Image 1 (tube, rainbow, N blue to C red):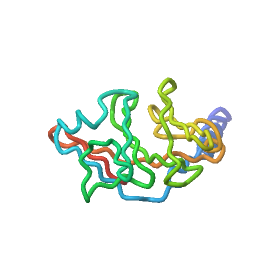
Image 2 (cartoon, helix red, strand yellow):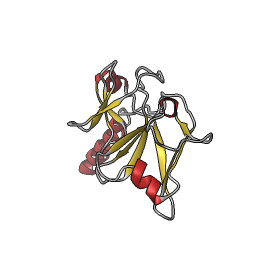
Image 3 (spheres, one colour):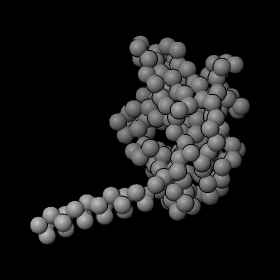
Image 4 (cartoon, rainbow, N blue to C red):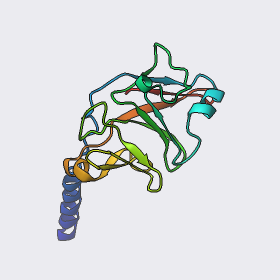
Length: 164
């Protein structure tokens, strides 16, 4: 009986402690995202094909320069990072650093480390294995994660990135 009570206390304690590790990935204001890859060819040209490959989409700056943006294209608050996760599946995050919370302060992927870093506060984020959660800096202290966007697969191998 005492053993069962001890096990219950351990389980409840673990549940309570795991609740303290909350990550706020909604600090960046909601903004429309609509990046369409209408054909498989579009996806092969502008998308990501494997783990660690990435592209920045910033409509205001015309990045990528030759992407066919339309009046219906939107790239979030500060732009969109499209990146292949560790399994090669596409993930999308807002480029704005949640610590700075400004549309013109954008994270950058550090190639040799496969993390994203803010050039201002130097916080780092795991964009390949842990859904944009903070790794270091003020973001880790405050619990600020990157805003996540949906990547939807179409029937014919094309994709679309949209806001949640």
